Length: 255
Image (cartoon, rainbow, N blue to C red):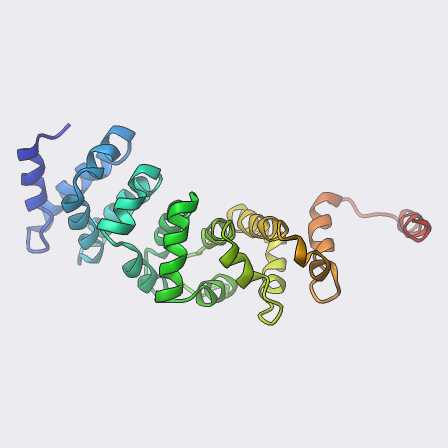
């Protein structure tokens, strides 16, 4: 692992004014370091290095920016760094602002970082608070439901982000607000074949919302009609014959 003097030297290479090739070598080194637990734990004690790396997510070099985003994907996968990232480095406002940009090249990486940071309840609460302050959960849902919002990114990992956020009662209250029709907009993505990540994120969101018993009657009512969307994936790909359909209908009538 790096000594303090070596870390200080590498930190000096993260300055925006440093030669591009030197910055690239430094970020490449930190990318490798972030790829294992000991490296992540070392960087946890170096918030100045983390701040320098995060500043380079706005570098003019696409390669450097890419390396830095993957560094923060690796770091955010380690729960012990969550408070450092959201508290000391304060990554959230910048990430959320860039997420709104429909042409930003690294929005998929941002979605992954946000998804990682919301896995555990404590940091999830912080992320939700900042989302509400900076952009609003309504905007996140709008981006998620607008296919093709970003021509450079798929944004599939907004699905797991929503699933993670709905472990919080405040987020579930928003999703289950009868006047917003959010659940109804999400239902179609339970059959989204292009991405298991997006589909699984929506199903996880609905599962969490179903823990609120007070909304069960509304979810089953014609206003939402959630049941067919939940049962259809269980039915299998086979088409029923006309006789089988009649038999199912008859049994339902008897029950």
